[in-house]
Image (cartoon, rainbow, N blue to C red; front, side, top):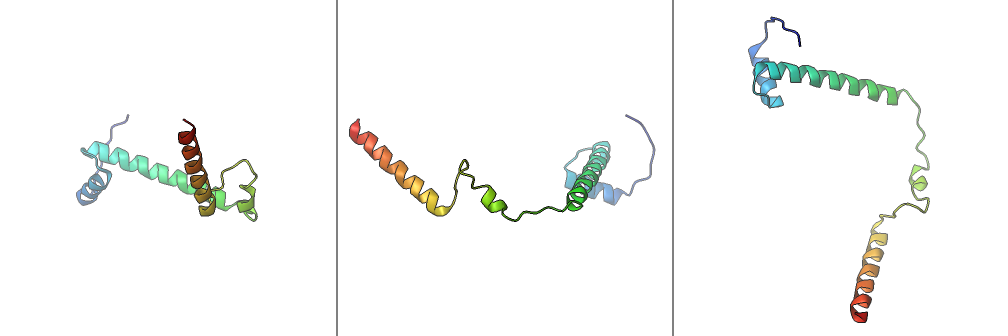
Length: 94
């Protein structure tokens, strides 16, 4: 880790310390730099996705290939009803 001397706006430093939840000036500056770098990288990734044309037409149907779960309200209600019936049958048999 390097060591430098800089003039810093104390109000901004205090605001950053409060937002970041850091306890020292050094921790605040390091966390602010890390956060800035992560946001920059995230922006680059978002730009990369935005630069590629994506076609999502039919994607809702693609997830219903038969091997996935149907989480529609009617299907969930039907599954719950069957589960209750199966539990009742098992309790009657036992």
